[in-house]
Length: 315
Ligand code: UT7
Image (cartoon, rainbow, N blue to C red; front, side, top):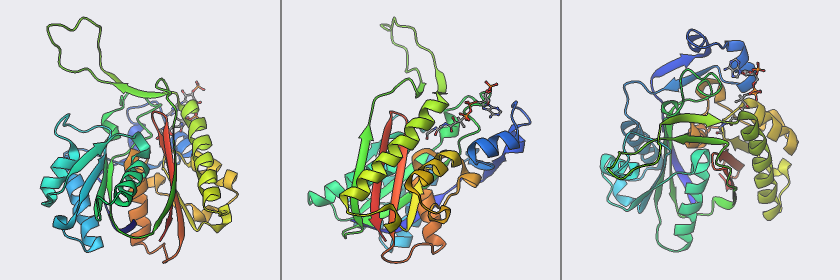
């Protein structure tokens, strides 16, 4: 397939590191040097499903495609206020599409997994036009009195429209179960039969373990992807990495031995917006005119599970 349109929407509330240090034992100095984040967009009175619909319409508009022409909608989402129906069905109604739709939860790697699903459906001959929407509100998962997690995240939606073509050149994906490293637990409705102990637990993270996994998984995925395609790292024009921590991005950059200007980044203004981070960055770079036709782009993401994935695109 090929990506022919992108769109993104951010919540209007911007929270700076100094605003966080008003109620947390933290500082702009600690957060910006350890993570690269200076501010983030945080959901306040918006609803994630409305932002997702708006981002989908922007992506359709930039693709010059009508919702009626879509054959499938894939929504990547970890949490939202609805347990059911799936967010993709809400987006389908919001944009006036009639095609089948599906939600996936692959944490921060959701955009890459969604691209691979779209490409596989297309190869199977079942779809021509696909809308991917990554809609995330990780700021609703963290404990806002826990300085180790809540300072990292921001909310937002990124969307992309794909049609038939040969822009996507290959994938490398991984999953390795490590459920004690990054997790959140929420209780369901009680029943007369529940006897086990249950309690809500906000997002828990073993930060250094996640950091090491992220650098290793992304470096390995990208190396394998390049080898599959007979390319060297220097043959790649742009590397769009999941925006989790600028030190993770720099470590992968050093592993690949590439110049800094091949790694566009928006982490300073957005923080980690989970699976939305890659498509928001793609949309921002595309609208700034960073990509020329024929540019080779690698996108790579990693997250809870653990899961990871990388894709090679030719713009
Ligand atoms: O999408 C994937 C999601 N997650 C990630 O990618 C996260 C990956 N991990 C990381 O980015 C880093 O591990 C963190 C940014 C989470 C933490 O950075 P670190 O350099 O690994 O710090 P640390 O956890 O080793 O903590 C160092 C110190 C500790 O204090 P002590 O025990 O040395 O006294 C922490 O309590 O920094 C303290 N600390 C803070 N201090 C001020 C932790 N968070 C903060 C904070 N402000 N916000």
